[in-house]
Length: 229
Ligand SMILES: Nc1ncnc2c1ncn2[C@@H]1O[C@H](COP(=O)(O)OP(=O)(O)OP(=O)(O)O)[C@@H](O)[C@H]1O
Ligand SMILES: [Mg+2]
Image 1 (cartoon, rainbow, N blue to C red):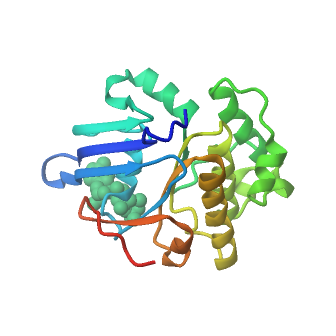
Image 2 (spheres, rainbow, N blue to C red):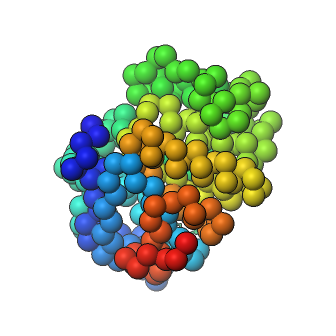
């Protein structure tokens, strides 16, 4: 999977329009982005500029109206919806801006379920939760966790199936400074040691020092200009 000549993610001229009539918005306006294995890319930009929309098309959660999305050379637009979901479960880790944990499941069971959905029955929940500093909360349900703790469980869950593309939306929004650096360092380590391509959306300029490239999204357009870190 981690052939170094094939991009982990290749988005070409993606256009995505959302809503109807007067509320119609061009969330993505001819966006192109290439991320190689082992690269850690940050995307910054104002609220409403299309950052989550970009992650959604990269993660096969939605499809662009035009343009292509390739993950390890696979054109997601050529897969049926079912095949795209299976592809996502096996190859892509997604950390949602909202956390998106299931209310009834303990932290450990969130990870086990993500494994089972991808046909992986032997999930090392202790090790994974430990890697995000959450081993001591394995038996807690989301309602019994703080916002930052929920986000860390979400990151551990995204790592369950050893994805080769990891898409992370605002992982540090609910974290203190020290935890923010720890979590982003963890993502950087995943990228650099395991050849995972990581795309992280963030408002937190403080953590950009851990990233290889920083791109900016404004009004649905991704600027190729690399920001000074
Ligand atoms: N279902 C929808 N219908 C119409 N417009 C939508 C819909 N969903 C999102 N939008 C608009 O699309 C644009 C891009 O949204 P997106 O969630 O990608 O922004 P974002 O950069 O992630 O913002 P934030 O930093 O606040 O999370 C926004 O202007 C939003 O208002
Ligand atoms: Mg967003």
